Amino acid sequence: MIHRTVVQVVWDVCMLSTAGFTLWRGGWAERVAALGMIVDSVGAAILQDKHDLFATPWSGLYFDIAYLGVMVWVALRSDRTWPLFTAGFQLVLVVIYVARLAEPHIWAWAEYTAIIIWSYMILIAIVVGTWLHWRGQRLERGLAPAPSPSV
Image (cartoon, rainbow, N blue to C red; front, side, top):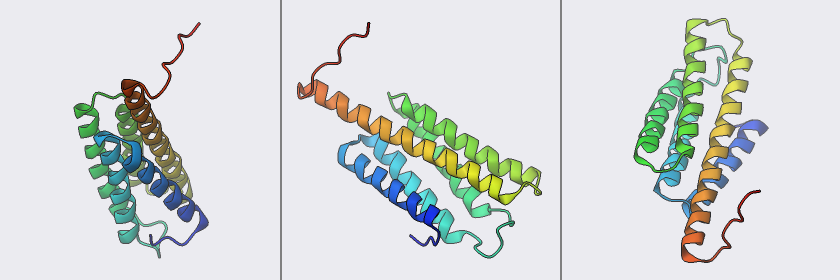
C-alpha cells in the first residue's frame, strides 16, 4: 500500500490478513466484503490529500459510500447476519464524514480516530463471519464436533 505511518501499516496488515483468511475459508459474502474493504482502503489512500489534514476527505467519502452500497447489497442477498453489522458499522463511517461536512471545525484527529475504530469493527465482523461460515461447512461435512447445548 502507499501508507507511511505505523498505524496505517498495522491497518494494512490486519486488512490483508482478513482478506487472506476470507479467500481461504470464506464464502461469497465474506469474500465480497473483504475485497470491497481493500478497494475502499486502497482507493481512498491513493486519492487522499496528504498535505492538508483539515481538507474535506472527499475520496474517502466516495469510496465509503460505495462500500456501504456493497455491504447493504451483501446483507440483502446473504442468509447470514454478520453483513448487517458490517453495513451498520459502514453507515456509521459515512455519517462521520457527513458530520465533518456539516461542521468543518470538527478536529480531524477525532474524525480519523472514529474512522479507525469503526473500520476495525468491520474487520472483526468479517473475520467472525468467515469463521462461522467455515465452522458451518465443517459441521455439514461431519469434520467438527457438534456444539454442545448450552445450560
